[in-house]
Length: 184
Image (cartoon, rainbow, N blue to C red; front, side, top):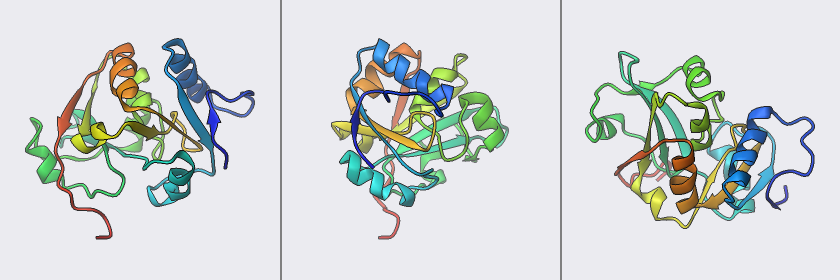
């Protein structure tokens, strides 16, 4: 794995949705670094990617309420454990669960393992509410996938949660999740 500045020189073999992420970031003059790797479906699979990027890639979870009338994309530190009851108290819903892969594809145009704030560019009807753990916003840099889980990227947190979200007409709700970490 190598770290590259900006978009790939060649786009053959890359999915259109990945290229659209680079197109949008470039049009917004948002600098980013990226690396290509084997498909990463879990945070554990991203550990080597973290070393290349020099940061901890965040966990992106696609959630919904019981009635499937409200959808959420939760961004949280990769090593934190999610307690849905704790999160439910901070947003106006109860009974949160993981949304289906079919819903993820319908609302965000990504498959399981590829959830990312970059996919909000496909949520033109604003059906998905972004939730961000306050700890993520404290980091200078932010790591995520460009709508595919065979590449990862890093950019400035203020660009990701500022200029990018403004461009795709989304905002976020800051949440505070406990410091319990997986494996501790």
